Length: 157
Image 1: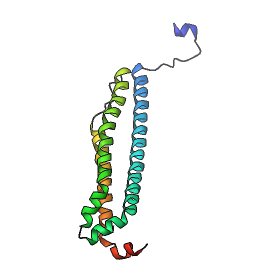
Image 2: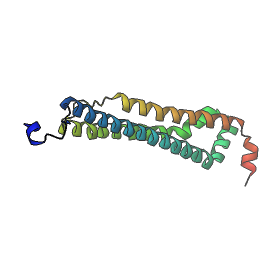
Image 3: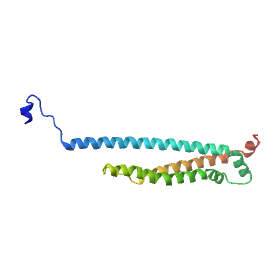
Image 4: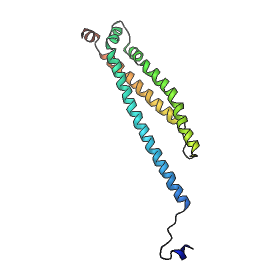
């Protein structure tokens, strides 16, 4: 039939499987782009957390030095200063993880995108990364606090 209607044009058809493969590849590329953006956002938030913790230690330097003069261990003092950040991270993760899981799975089920899987591993890895950065911050500030001379800091004003 096509030869009779358009005898001078060659048939240029595609298989339906090729169309679906192209569609799935575009979704895969979109998924990879979103994962890269999420990773970048996680790195930026960890840098912000580290800066916030540094600011908290700087603001409480006199209190920390007084505790150090009275015999407190620098590691314990640094942990006490950062404990509120660890609690806030845990509360934020407890609220955000279920919300984001629902926010990702509901559209997947609604649009019948069964080939996209979302597991709890992504959320657990991101939480572990943020906690690791917080613990790294605690260790770094403990080392800085162990080296600081309380007399010089307290004499500053």
